[in-house]
Length: 127
Image (spheres, rainbow, N blue to C red):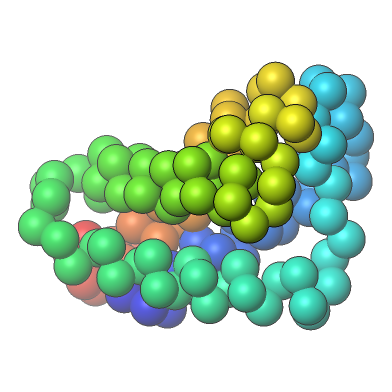
């Protein structure tokens, strides 16, 4: 579960970085364009792995796709309602970063959930 979450965290991070570098987030008015550094990436991998423990919950066991999307709502809620307003001081749901920030957070965390679910499926475990 942890390794699946780490992979999800890695792909989530690459998606965040790539869309920032490509200018898509900025073009849509969202100020999310991190630099791809070990200091930025490492915590994403660890937290992705920790969030991977959610796959132990007996939810939607027959559909890895739906399960990954459902479980991605956990880290999404924490990012939008805890990290952005309390730690990063970017307002509720990170709206100080742009009006579409919640949409990007949903998308990026869906990448995490789907990647982790696929990893579990193809590693021989049933998510």
